[in-house]
Length: 193
Image (tube, rainbow, N blue to C red; front, top):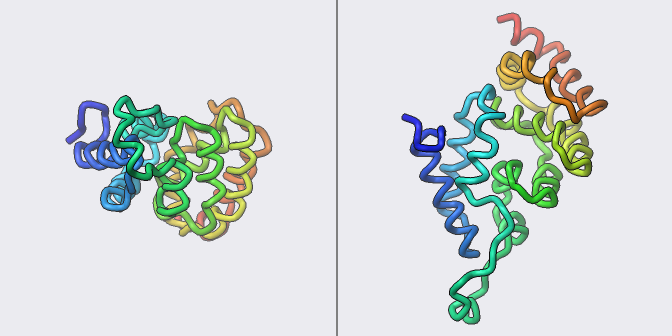
């Protein structure tokens, strides 16, 4: 069942929990694994529809100063950068962060095969980011990650992205990384099944 924001209700709830932690400067550790699992379960066709919904629900924007400054004097509040360093899987969620510096930091931390077609699509989406440094960082990450990603994951993402990616207007040479992933012999076999 979809929640009010077009996300599955369980994912929406987990993202809201992560967002509350981020907004309060508290560690995201408890809610993060189920939020990432929920992202992994999304279809790659949803990337353009849910990218901003994920960011809004998880409050992935620069943390605003608290109105209640008194408790802030007595406890350490983690910044989003500190959270990313402390919780490595936050990189998957920060692919959707409104702050380009944090999106760039997130894509720089991608080094292995991607765990789902949705996250493959998310990195491909970052290759078309409106911030040029994010596109460049995404290209370097794609060159590392796409060859290591399971061919079934790439094939599932390809089926969803092939018809949509021609409308993406910001990328140029970055597109070559996606095309190279589609042309892998093992991906071609997976697409043929």
